[in-house]
Image (tube, rainbow, N blue to C red; front, side, top):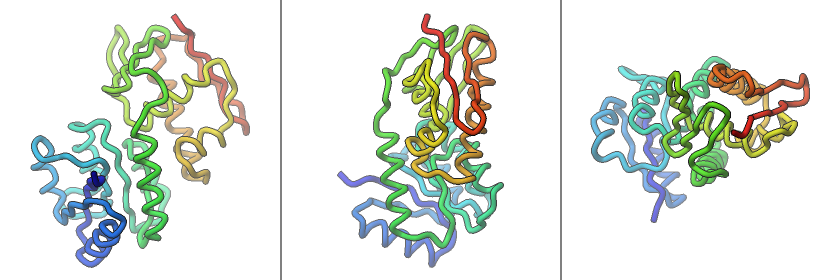
Length: 228
């Protein structure tokens, strides 16, 4: 069965070229030029495996559209297309919970590789679905981190990072190993993104002081999740 891709790109020429190329690679592509049309199918005909969203679009930009999609489909993987090679675009997309980004005009082979890597990464989880972490409970299928004082809805990237840390509990983990495994690339932007996600996980676990994610400057992180 072909992988179904949601492509949202308002530029007619680029959208047509990208759709044709993806179809040549045996993907099933549904192309929307108007992001508002995507919103109308979220609760009915939304049966895609991955979304490719342009950032700069009229009415609803890619960031806003991704928030709407992820609210209804929290595990839906998203790759952003950006015409601007600027740090703020990349970090904003990663903070929202997007799985990757690529700048336009993009190299078709690189795009295909990124799509396949995202699909491979999100097709299976490395741990059981329900995990006890100190005073917290993680439901990785529902992307839900629960605590008696309240629940936290995780993004896919946060869930993947948390599962990776749990897999290496009571160990020192190198930054490069995390980036190579989860982001499958290692540059300034992904390094900054990793720091953002680590900071967010620390805040999520603030109610249990026995849970520790310590930074080792220039090396990586030391993980200590109590197993109760």
